[in-house]
Image 1: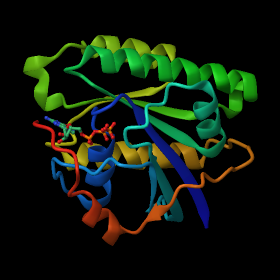
Image 2: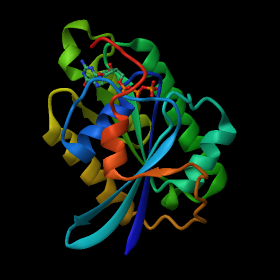
Image 3: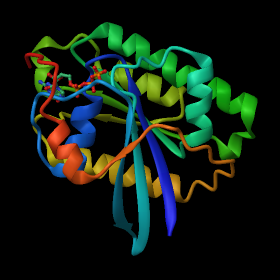
Length: 205
Ligand SMILES: Nc1nc2c(ncn2[C@@H]2O[C@H](COP(=O)(O)OP(=O)(O)OP(=O)(O)O)[C@@H](O)[C@H]2O)c(=O)[nH]1
C-alpha cells in the first residue's frame, strides 16, 4: 500500500488544523488544540487504489527556518500552503513558504521531481473582510507552480475534501523519488484527534 505524506503549512491561525479536522471528521468545531506538532493518519481509496495518508500539522510552530522546511520537503510528497484571505500578513508568510519550497526543491532535486504544492486561501466566508484579492492568490500560485483554491473550512466540507483528495492523487502519481525521513513526532488516531480538537486556545471567528 502506498504512503502519501502531506504537510499543511502557513502562518499562525490561518486554519491549518480546521482544514485537517474538517477533512478527517467532516466537522468544523471552531476551537483547536495547538500545543504541539502532530501527524494524523487516514486510509483512503483514490482511483481504486488504497493509500495511507499522513497529514503533518505544525500547530503554532511557524515554519520560518530553511532547515525546518528542508526537513519537511524531504519528508512530504505534497504541501498545502494556507493563508487567511482576511489577513494580509498571512499571505506574505504563504508567499515566503512557497518560494522557499521551490528554492529548496531546485537545490535538492531535478525540476521533474519537485513537490506538489496546493495554495489555499482559507476563510472565504470572511470575504467582507478580505485583505487579499483572489487574483493575488492566483498570481502567486502561477509563479510557484501551485494549484490554487479559495475555500472555507468553516462552511464547506465538499471543497475541502476535493482539495485534499486531488492533492493526494497528484502526489501519488508525481513520481517524486526521494528518501523518506519520518518526523519523530507522534501520530494520532481518529479517536484521539476528536478528543484533542477541544482545546486550550480560544479564538473568535
Ligand atoms: N471564519 C472562519 N474561521 C476559521 C476558518 N478556518 C478556521 N477558522 C478559525 O480560525 C482560528 C484558527 O484556526 P486553526 O485551525 O486553529 O488555525 P491554525 O492555522 O491551525 O492555527 P495555529 O496552529 O495556531 O497556527 C479558529 O478560531 C478557527 O475557528 C474559516 O474557514 N472561516
